[in-house]
Length: 178
Image (cartoon, rainbow, N blue to C red):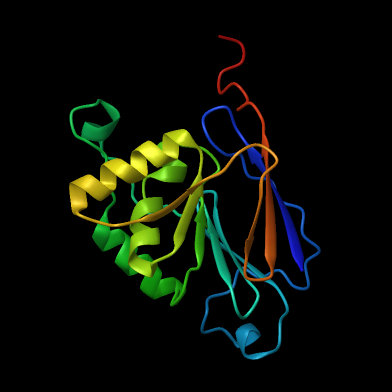
């Protein structure tokens, strides 16, 4: 059984994980390393995103491919998932299956694409109350029916052979001197 510790931030979940890794790789799905037996693979996907795969179960943490425009930054346009960017990156990464999506906290660079990824793969989306509001808003906006599981401090969930335990923590200040 693989054990993962996930830190819940004040605005959601902070992700730090402790795993005894059999193998770590930043390779693409069609690279030769995946043709060998590898008990656990960690793949960076973008920004803070990464996949954990054990050959049976795929967990995706902080999936993000959408990039905000200047209009988004100035609050003149709502930031929504960029479906074309998501499709292109899923194809490039060779992602065929996702069982669960976890978001460390609800900053856009961690959360904007999580609902879209969970919807595309029929994966369960795990997170705190703020992520649940984002997921429910996307359900309403796009007509989806997402599988969302609200997680609490010290709660453990099992997905495949992975056990994930959540811990509430405070997000560090971005500009601590201000």
